[in-house]
Figure 1 (cartoon, protein in one colour):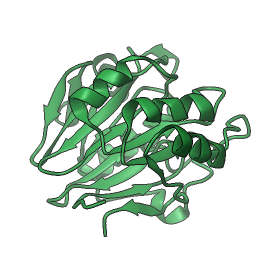
Figure 2: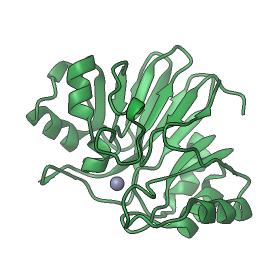
Figure 3: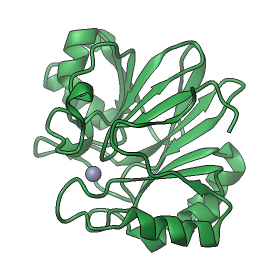
Figure 4: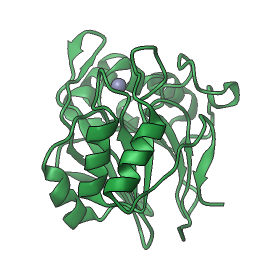
Length: 235
Ligand SMILES: [Zn+2]
């Protein structure tokens, strides 16, 4: 696919993206404690923006440490954002939003969309879980579904955002499994689908190869299964 956006999957739900202007974006940076993240990706120091889907530890991960070290912005749903402030996030770095709302950066915008899941942080209620829709100016739309099961709003997201790349949780147990995830891809019809949230812990038994065969049966999506740390988009 023709794009100036670069993307790496870092294991579980974590991604590193680089925009066309070189802005470095991390999504759900659960890295240092993630058993599948390669060592060279556990401790990034060149982060401009962190985007969070919800408050669970396997998503917030190293956010506060990275924010302290790099001075990056941290974008999260309102209640989670306030909790992160309570736990030490600097007000200058804090950007809150809520579902349907977008935050604009130099060469992309991010919209918080729905996800069917729960959210807490360090035992406190952290608002609602969401998905993230990144629209890069004159380039692709990248949809990180967060943790979720299937829901019918996906038909609307296809019409509104036309996502080219979708990161789909399919590990089962805490999210949907491979077959439901494949039907999400049928509804969204992206160019590329990337399975996430599997294999990190023993309970996440969803098989990415099973997801791939279901998805390629139900949709036109090309399913990429990167290794943790592997770049799967851009040059
Ligand atoms: Zn999770």
